[in-house]
Length: 234
Image (cartoon, rainbow, N blue to C red; front, side, top):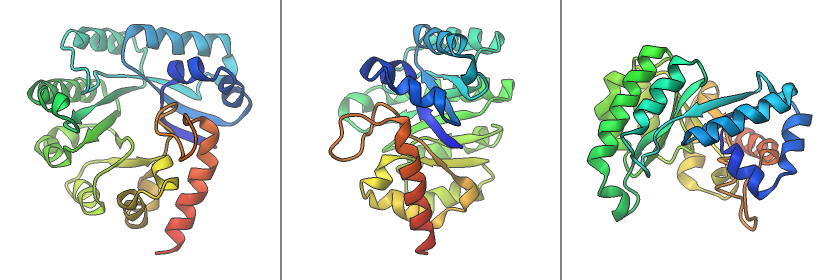
């Protein structure tokens, strides 16, 4: 199976419509991340028009920390009540830039609210965390209530990942083209983490391989092979 823990289907197909053929013609499983109702409807319509993808493409929705709009909590509540999403995400914390750091207090508020909603609905969460792994530990008790916590494009240290697991969080850590691009922290985390805690992703169309303009589902087999190669070098 070609497993993509995190992609943006609408944005990917806007850039490269032919990627739909790869998704339809292969044993491809993916969580399609959405930030608004329009994106949710796009994924739902794609699945309806391509019934072979039903059960293989899952919808996730969350308030992204780079765009912390409190009004979207009602959208999340509605989608959960209508059983239209399979995961809450991507959600999280981001203070990568001064601009994002200015909204950090609101990010933390919305992060906690969405974790509570996910726990109540027994849904997994997909996390976006940049320059904020220490603050994740402030939410450990909430995270322990979540059925599955996926750290999308994990950028923390191997030690932080181990500590998250040791605190009792049922976490997986997802890696993409950063592995192929030689990201040292990601490679070390892959070497250290148990195999069952490692997932693959593309974040398509974002985070491409060096020399390419966008990432795509077809990158997954190469990412999987690289992870296997790294793991054998322990």
